[in-house]
Image (cartoon, rainbow, N blue to C red):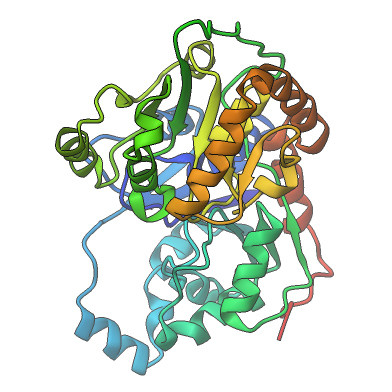
Length: 385
């Protein structure tokens, strides 16, 4: 079959939202299917895309320059937005297109082009949050994108509920799929010493709006945390707030408590040097860092967003804050700190839980689902009203 992948990823050349579709694409190539993908262009092509191209995938890189607002509004009024991606679709002539939304507010116009040409498509949504709403002027486009998809894939029930609420739509023909991870299935990094310090890692792009590293700064400024032997290191690409973070450390004198570690190329090594994950996100899907921390036997401290509540037993295999606020992050950190001697045992329970509740071959499973949906000759054209 000819399977095409369209990624809406912007802001960074690569991110966790790209792992599922790209790895599924690699599996399909190995099985002899024809694969093409469409991504934004960057000065340097990311390594995973280079590997796909080397394995035989056809690549289309579109410009990052956005269409002017006046032109966008004119095309929208004339109902011509479906023209935007028609040339690419006519060129690659796919049997099925998977649209990978990195965020629920990403541009849905590729779905218009697919419908105009009668190309069956599916959607996989990687992240959604209750604090960002779709532009009301484009709600019809969003509703149509999801309603006419042959299948909607979500990586958490929470994300599906956010979309249904945002759009006031019912999506009965949707399903939950699992994200891939970069550590070995049997990974078990050594437990680091706790003789002088307890160490947490926040593994996420440095993006305050979604990942909420600003809350870590606010909480660790509190007098009680300044006197405790707790250290937090941020690991991840800068997505706009790294300079702000570094300035905060200078202004508040937090260099002894918080640091930026850069981008880790060895996640198992990272977890051999930290006791737990601190991820106070305002919006998530199914964070790869959460999956990896749990597989590696590290206690997760996170917020009730995305997949967290489905994977973590609160106070048993990790700690969950009800929402991303400074007060609630302080509360969950206090709860975790008071049980720090249990972190190792809790991490072991987390490692067991993730292996029971999450696919250990997510890319292969997703490739199977894509082929099944693409081959469904009895699929209803419109899946929801």
